[in-house]
Image (cartoon, rainbow, N blue to C red; front, side, top):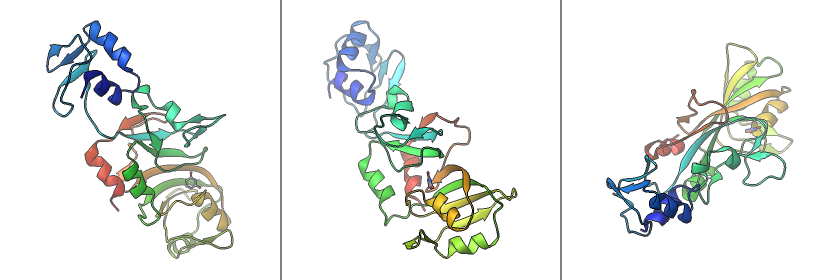
Length: 235
Ligand code: URA
């Protein structure tokens, strides 16, 4: 692949003309040699490429774990609010990136952003039942009866049947975790509402067996390694 094409495909903040300029300034190296021309051919699988001292490694797809703050929406475009794609660093804003699954504007926590449509499809398909764990703060104390109510599969809003879910009360009676195996619109909030309670705070803490990094501050993100991506689909 051409060097400029390779670099700009991995770094959306670097256009081909920007790469040309960086090469001209002697800031690009391939296998330890400074490369002054951006149209040389490189082997994207094996070449050691550095731009401004930063290694550009080749990954066909990008997987980003974002700790979404409140007030940010999970769509690709929104007229009023900031979108998850707008708050990730420019180097991750590759072509085709989108949030795989949605959280409400006022929900915090783990959102996966990727350009891997196949993985997203597997994760989001209604048949996949990838578990998602939520930490919930309630308006009123939780009750023991919730365990069975969730385990039995609840019906919400009259006729919407939910799959069995795992409820676990916290030592603080206003806190709990809930594991869902599907993703209906406002599902956690609607399920608690049907029990006569209300969600006052919601955070997604894991997808599959991949947990939100507890040290990741709100609004920040990190790249997920390919070996960890498998955990997203693990039950
Ligand atoms: N359930 C909800 O009610 N809201 C979310 O953002 C996610 C799950």
